[in-house]
Length: 56
Image 1 (spheres, rainbow, N blue to C red):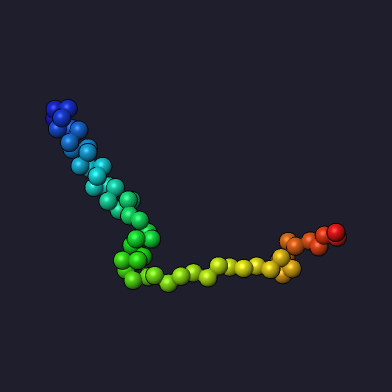
Image 2: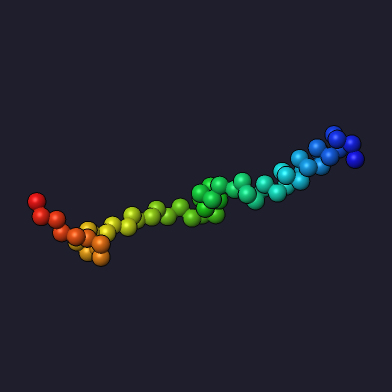
């Protein structure tokens, strides 16, 4: 193979390998119909196992 042929071969191989790696998961979720908003997880410090009451 000549250098130009090798370069084109590797370029095509790289582009093919990146098709699945370059997918935006949020765009895919919207396209597939998943547009539900998430509710944030709220943890009250008083209910946390790591909460230590501090005296003021």
